[in-house]
Every structure is written in C-alpha cells, then in structure tokens.
Image (cartoon, rainbow, N blue to C red; front, side, top):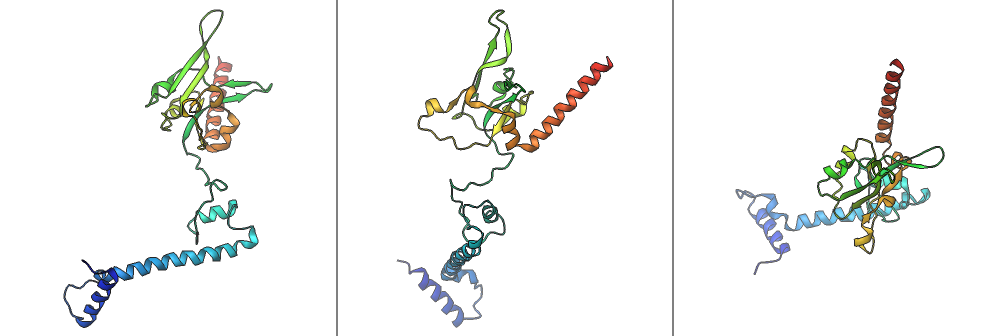
Length: 234
C-alpha cells in the first residue's frame, strides 16, 4: 500500500535537505504537495477577485446583466468569475456565426413580400446531408413552372449548418441564421421548418450580417447600373 501524497512530498524534501548533492535530483519529483497548494492559491485568488470586482461594479449598476460588464468579463481584462448568467445574459454572436438557414424576402413599397428564391434547386443539390426539398410553383392555366417556391422545407435535425446552400445561391435568397434557441417538445413536426417559418425579411438579414449585406447590396447596385448603361448604349 502506497503512502499518501503528503507523506511522499515530506519524505522527498527531507531527503533533499539531508543529501544536497544527490545526483539526478529534480524539483518536479517533490511536487506532490506544492502543486496542490499552487492550485488552491489560484482558486483562492479568483475567489477574492470575484468579490473585489463585484464591489467595483456596484456603483455602475452591477457586474451582471449589463452589456458593458459582460464585454469586460469575456475579454482579456477579466478578473474573478467569468460565468455568463444564461439565459438572462448571452454571449454576443459573431457576424459569421452559422446556424439553420432562412429564406430572404424583400418588402416592396406597397408592403407586399417578394421572395428572392426562384426555386432553382441549387441549394438542395449542393446540400451534403440532403436536408432541403422544394416544391416549385406552376401556372394554373398553362402548367408551366413559375420561378417561385410553393413549398420549401428544411429538416433541422439533419442540417449540419455548413453554409453551402447560402454560398452557392445565385440570388442571395438563402442565408445562415443566428437564432440558435430552437428547443421544442416534438422534433417530428417542430424540427421540419416550412416556407412560412423559414422566411425572414432582408432587413433582418441586414441586422445580423451588416457587412455581408452591405457588400451584396453594393454588388447588386453596380450590376444594375452596368445593365442600365448597356441598355442605354444599345
């Protein structure tokens, strides 16, 4: 039966004092108790710093449930406790964060919603787990296809949030969302999102991805200007 770590540590240091010139001696060999003490010291330091930081933020509305305080707690300047009080507090989501895709629609001056999606099917073709399926609209009189989806489904239990659908879409009609709170009681019905649940406005897309939205709108405006100039020249 081996002796406890504290006994081995004391024995190690006694041997070192008794035989100072002992060859091959390494300080690490006597770290049984020192390492534990150092770890407890770090824990105690964080414990004290937590109360110190709480007192410092007392006059500024408290250290919790504050956007300013949360940014500092998640930065390199953080001291004491780093815990995020979820769901009351939430970490800021990076702009390029990818979650379940959504469909983008534009709002016209008269308030009508116009889907960007043309039901071309590219997103469904490039989807690695094949979680997208689309039903294209047809003209009731001629029976010809209309560039608009009647139905659009995504199974979020299968979707792996890779973003290929958004990357390959030529019409900027499908984008990756930031909404990760999608818990439900029934995954068989609630986790298959239809067109109504997937559709969100272009203004929403601009709010979660302002950099990408601005770049795409600039490219779209330049394309329209070039088209108008070519038409005028012809």
